[in-house]
Length: 231
Ligand SMILES: N[C@@H](CCC(=O)N[C@@H](CS)C(=O)NCC(=O)O)C(=O)O
Image: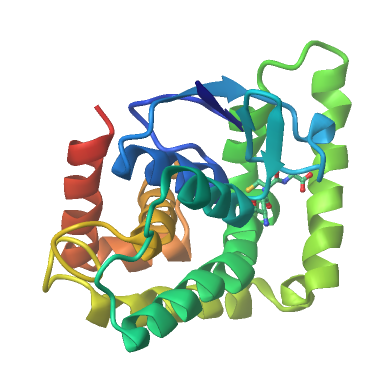
C-alpha cells in the first residue's frame, strides 16, 4: 500500500499544503490506492512534505514522487497533449509552484488576517507552553524564507498585486473544457486545482480570495473536481 505522508490527511478534502494535495490528486486521478498519514516535516529526508512510502522506499518531493509513480505504474501524466500544451503545462506549474506559492505563504503566514487563522489552524493542538512559543518561531522562519526567496522584500500591496496577476492569467485557460486540457485531468490540473481550492477555502479574507471569487469559471472548475474526486 502506498502511504502519502502529509499534513492533514482527509480523503474528502485537499491537504492544506499544495504540494501534498498535488500528489493526493495525482493518486486519485490515476486510481492508485493509498492511505494518507499525518507526518512531521522535520522528520522528512528533505525537511518538507509530502513524502511517499512504498514498502522500503521513502520518496521525497512531489515531482520526484510523481515521476516514481509514473515509472512504477507506467503512467503517462499528460496523455495526448501536444508539445505546445506540455510546454504551457510546465510553465503554468512552475509559475504556481515557484512564484505564486510564496505569495500564498505571505497571505497565510505574514498578513495579519491570514496569520490569525493560520496560527489557530496549524498550531491549536500543541500543548502548553509550546502553544505560546512555537507558532512565532515558525512564523519567523517563514518570513526569513520569503525574504531570502525575494518576494518578502516587497510591500504587502505589491505581493498581493503579483498574486492576483497570476490568477488573472489563469482565467483564459478556464471554462472551455472540464479540465485545463480537455475532458480528463492531466498533470497541470494536479497543481491548478489545489491552488484555486486554497484561494477559495483558506478561511481568511485576502486579495487572492477576492480575485478567485470574481471568476465563475474558477468556481465551476473547483466544484466539479471536488465532486468527482473528494467524496
Ligand atoms: N519541492 C517540494 C516542496 C514541498 C514544500 O515546500 N512543502 C512545504 C509545505 S507546502 C513544507 O513541508 N514546508 C516545511 C518547511 O519548509 O519547514 C515538493 O514539491 O514537494
